[in-house]
Amino acid sequence: MPKTEPCLPFACRIQDCLQRNKYQESQCQNEIADLIKCCEKYKYLNQVCCSGFKKELDKVKDSAK
Image 1 (tube, helix red, strand yellow):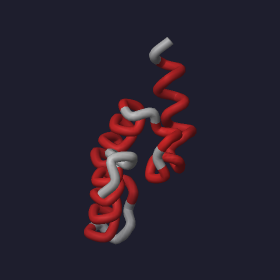
Image 2 (cartoon, one colour):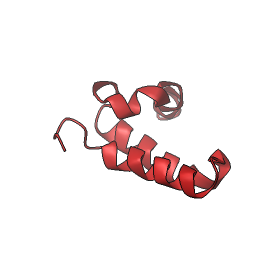
Image 3 (tube, one colour):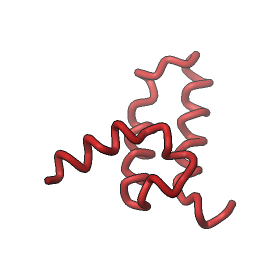
Image 4 (cartoon, helix red, strand yellow):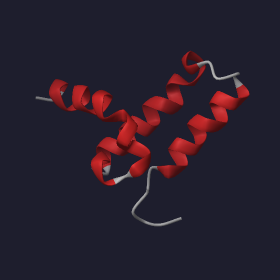
């Protein structure tokens, strides 16, 4: 796994969770939260696996102000 994608394992956990729970997103909120935390920590815009969470990450950044 390339070092430029440190949050990729979190994205994989989301996919595993969704598959186990018949794609019910509400069942995977912990995994989603973990990915968002990782993306925030590692500057999400540089990672493909974080690009779909820009809206959520912007909310996190705004609440920190």
